Length: 63
Ligand SMILES: [Zn+2]
Image 1 (cartoon, rainbow, N blue to C red):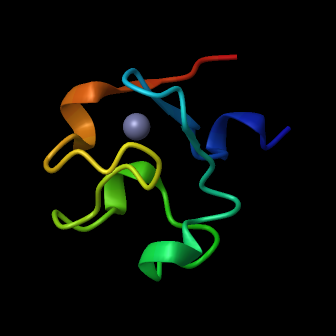
Image 2: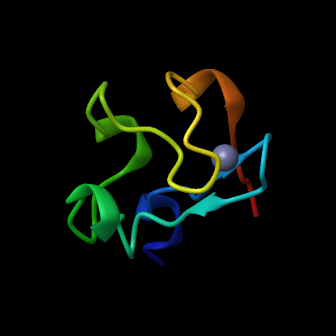
């Protein structure tokens, strides 16, 4: 199956927002299908909006 190729979801440890690559983030012009790893450096959590929260505060969801 293709399961392993699906980009992982990532959760913000501050507010528990989940970044879902299938949805992207339309509030920051991230198109659906964008893996977390490919987010621009300017991207930040849309819920808690902490600057530079990015990868340090996000944790990969394994399921
Ligand atoms: Zn957050």
